[in-house]
Length: 152
Length: 82
Image (cartoon, rainbow over all chains, first blue to last red; front, side, top):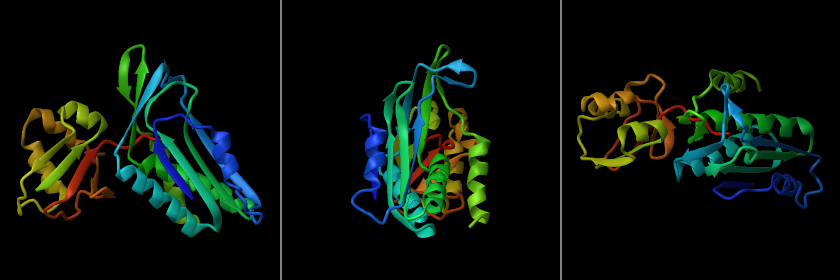
């Protein structure tokens, strides 16, 4: 398992490939990449600043990955999230899971993203033609989380 | 002593990222600390937002969580990572 919070850009392909590792028992690898979009809420976005809570961020991500590992038979989890200044088109987050069969890796990747979006201390501030603005959280993200409390 | 931290929009609007609050046994929960801060005046009303999130010693918690001397407490708006 590897978890990173960093300012530097990263290569999602490298993180995806690392998930199989040397484990020939791995039958499935699922990876999710989140990118900075060049528009939001009807406005063009020229860039984004990612603030976080140093110390808590790493613990929160580790806790989410641990929860996923308890819930599904995962062989590996890789998670990286950028902070600081980002340009449109840049990868902002990568979450990947490896397992013997695909269901666990698919479900765990979604689970980790749903928790990350609503529980990990990151905040986006985007640059638009009107100036800088803090991105508002979405109700749909909170709803996405709720399904995990009922569904096994 | 209580170590307080504020993030993102709250940090900007309060013009404060961290401060120390002398330990006061009458402040039993994060809600008590929030109330104490709200009493400071207009600028602090941003903390009255119903969707405020908080953490005690770098773990998410509810406003009803009990606090202790030496705690690191944080208040912040809903998170928007990912």
